[in-house]
Image 1: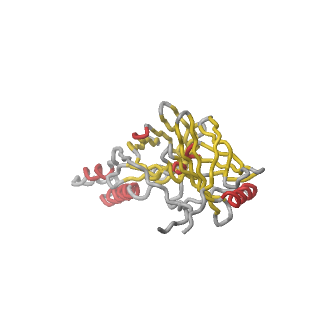
Image 2: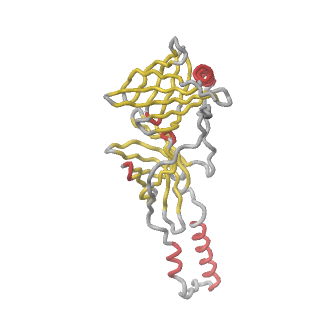
Image 3: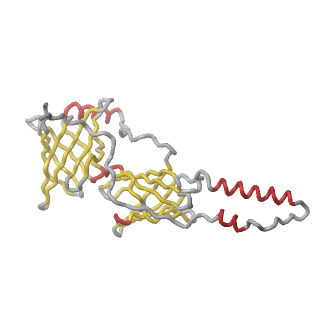
Length: 297
C-alpha cells in the first residue's frame, strides 16, 4: 500500500459548525415615496410647477443614492479588531451586509480559532450604534460608529463579562491572509527555528485527569521563516495559526493565540525530542514533543 509524506496545510481554514443570521427594521424611504404617488404637485409660491418637479427630482436622486453603495455612516462592509480576554488574544473579522429588503445581516471570523463565516444574530444599526449577537456562543457586541465612519468602538459581552473591542473598517477587497510582519531580529530567529525543528511534532498533556493530544506542524516558508499550524484534541481544534515562532538562546518558543497558550523548550540529547513548558490559563505543565518520522513510500 502506498504511503504518502505529510505536507504542510494550505491556508484554507475549516468551516464552522451551525449558526444563523437575523435582521432589523427595513429602510422605509421608498414606501414613503410610493405613498405620495397620485397626489398633484403643488406650485411653489412665486415659482412654477417646473420648480416643484425639479425639487422632486432631487429627492429621488437622494433616495436612489441612499439605496446604493454603503456610505461612511453605514456599518456595511468588513471590519477587523483584536479581542483580548486575559491570556486569550483573538483576531476577529466582522462582515456586515444589507439585503434587497434593507435588512442587515453579517458573519464573523475568528482567525486564530480557525473559524470563518459564523452567521450573526440580531444585527441592528440605529442612531450610530451597531449591535449583533452570537446566540449559540452567548456573545453580544455593541459599538458606536465614529463621525468618519471608519471605527466602531464598543464592548464584547460574554458570560457576564465585558471586554473592550474596537473594530476598524477594512478595504472593500482586503488582501489574503499573509504571514505576520517580523522585525529583522524576529525574522532571523524564525528562520533558525525553521532550520532546526521543521516537521511534524506531537505531545500528550495530562492535567487534572484530562488528556489533551497536541500536534505542531512546522515548515519553512518561501522567505525561510518558520510557519506553523497547531491541533488540540481537547478543543477539537485543527490548523490553528501559530505566531511568535523563534529560536533564541538554544530554545524554541511559539504562541497559539486561539488557545491563549504558548510553549518554550529545548531540543534534548535526542534530536527528535522537544522538552519544555506548556503555558495556558495561568497554568504551566511540563510537556515533551516527539518528532514524527516522515512516512516513506
